[in-house]
Structure formats: C-alpha cells, structure tokens
Amino acid sequence: MQEFFEFGLGGRVLYKAGLARELGQVVADLGAQRVFVVADKGIVGAGLLQPVLDGLAGHAEVVGTLDDVPPNSSSSVVMAGAEAARAAGADLILAVGGGSPIDTAKGIRLLATFGGAVPDYEGYNVIASRLMPMIAVPTTAGTGSEVTSIAVILDEAENRKISLVSRYLYPDVAILDPELSLSLPPRLTAATGMDALSHAIETYVSTENNPFSDSLALAAIDLIATHLRDAVQQGNNIEARGQMMIASCMAGIACSNSLFGVVHAIAHSIGALYHVHHGTLNAIILPYGMQFNSVVAPERYVRIARAMGVNVGGRSDEEVIADGVSAVRTLAVECGMPTRLREVEVPEGALPELAALSSVEPAIFNNPRVSTEEELLELLRTMW
Ligand SMILES: [Fe+2]
Image (cartoon, rainbow, N blue to C red; front, side, top):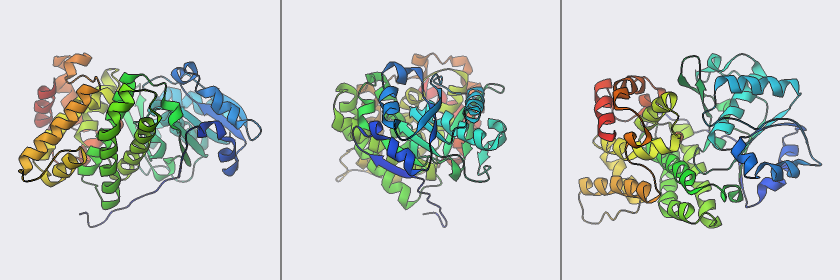
C-alpha cells in the first residue's frame, strides 16, 4: 500500500430515475439563477434536453446554450463557450451529455471564471481557487466525468489531448438519472461501458491505488460484468441502465483519485490523431493492457478476475489471471466491440508515432509497469 495517499470526495451524487426533470431545486440549492447549458446535437436530437430545461422553469433562467459540442471537444470550443457564458452573465454551468459536453463544461467554467486559454491550465493543480458552480447530468454510463477532477480537451494547435487535473474541477452536483441513457444505441452503450470498465481496472492497478479507490473499483468491475450485457442487449432495461450509471460513477470517483495507466495513454494518443470513439479504443486496448501489466501486479489481477466472475478455487494465479483477461475480452466481443486497431482504421504505419506519443502521455506515468517506447511499440503491434 502507498505510504501516503489522498482521497477526494468531490461533490454531491444524486440518483433517481426521472431526476433530471426536477433540477430546479438543485440549481436553487447552489444559490444560482442564471444557467448556461452545455450539450451536444445527439442530446438535443434524442429529446433529452427539453425535459431538463422544463425542470428549471420557475427556479432559474437559461441565459445561454451551447448545444453542438463535437464528440472530441477542443480548446476553441471551450473558449467560445466561455465567452458566451460570460457575455450572458451566467452564474452556473449545466452540462447534459457524455464525456465531451461534461469536459467542455469544466473547461468553460474554468475560463469563464479566470479567463485565459485551456493550455494555460494544463497539468496538476494549476487552478488556484474555486470556479463557477457546475451541475453534470451524464446521459451515458462511461466517462465518470460527472464526478472527476479531470478534464481532457483536444488542443487543435498541437493536435494532442490536454489533461487538466484539479480538485476545483469536480462538478458540485452529479445527477444520475438512468432514464436519460435508455435511448443510447447498443454500440455506444457498449463503448461507454467498456470505458467505465477500463477506468475501474486501470485505477485498481495504478501506482496511485489506495484502499478507498480499490473498493469502488472492484464494486464497479462486478457491476459492469453483471449488467453491461443487459444494458447493451435490452436498451430499455432500467435496472441494467441504473446499475451501469452507478458503476461508471464509482469508477469515476476511483480513477479521479488513483488515475490511469497504459490503456488510457494509448487511447488518448490514438484519439488525438484519429477520430475513433474513446470507449471503443479502450475496449480494444484493455485486454492487451491487462496482459502487459499482469506480470508486475499478479495479485491485483487475481482480484480483478474474481470481480469479473472468474472461479478461483484451487487454481494457479496464472490460470485465474488469464481467465480474467478472457472474461474482459469476451464481454467486449459479446457487446459487439472490435478487438483490433486495424478494425477501426488505425494504419500500421502509425504505430511508431503512437508508441512515442504514448510514452509521454500523462496516464503512462501511473502505470504499474514502467514502459519504454520500444515496449509500447511491441504492445501496439500485438493489438493491431
Ligand atoms: Fe476513459
């Protein structure tokens, strides 16, 4: 165990089917009245935004909306949003959507509070003090961004993902309403669910693991192994949707405290160069990353295998770990995810550049196995 660790609890988490339609009181509790809404076209198209807006009526005024956040949001989108929020005199940012709108909203509250540009705040604890309040309403069960101190935003100028990490980035309130994820198509349900699983597994083996994160990570792995198939195959299963939202949130709290590893280092590097869904990338990379790391943390991979439902009785650690990796791969396949980078059109010729990028991506520094660029290239080749 670590000699020293810090575990931050962030903000409030509220869970209830239908809760998004009752947000007015939550906004009032934060002392806010002028709401700036951040969402994407998919949310608007699925009819998810209007009930949220209706729920604000009588409590707060919507003074501005940015409702076309792109899938891999960028520093210029954040900048434009912050200018609009400021000009409108907003006193609260409300994000509705998946990881991209929520991370964008974190950037907007940062720049609307302090000015400047996204790269000015890159790294750990660069933000000096409290930001404008924010409520996060996830519509997917995957990123956990509604409860994390992290925002990942693409910088177009340098074509790389910038990570901002600060305890001031925690949204004040996370609203978990499984009704909002009922219309999410199977493929996105699968990809976001595998993202949540990668958070739980990566953070459990990270160099920053601690007993508080461990308990949340293992519980999240168990819930995802139990409910992701149903959420993908029976989209209207509110029980499975609710359990996945809880699992994703638990994994988010864990990884906000204990960070990531090689899977996210590679996924972020590929995501900066090719527009492949982050969760789909993690679904591909995760089993290979587990295999790669299991040699240095075998006892942790035995616990992961148990949480995935693998029977351990009277069997060697090697067998149990191999079954744990297979259980993750099988889950991804049964949920319709690809298993190779070539299937998502990452060219073989890009692997050396991706290895170089991954070797300096911030997530790699918390990976349990120290990884050279050469080892990362070898790993990338196995998954291509
Ligand atoms: Fe992720």
